[in-house]
Image (tube, rainbow, N blue to C red; front, side):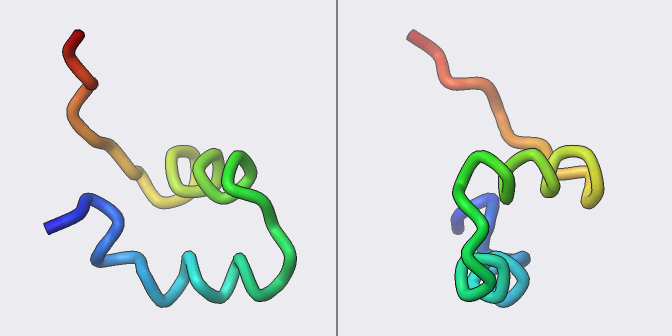
Length: 41
């Protein structure tokens, strides 16, 4: 399951409002406590 799956409705609403991915991600991190495992190289 995607780390974003639980917030899908909110994310889709933000896209419909014209927000870009960077702004949406920032809001998820700062306003919704969004965390995800770091990508390993």
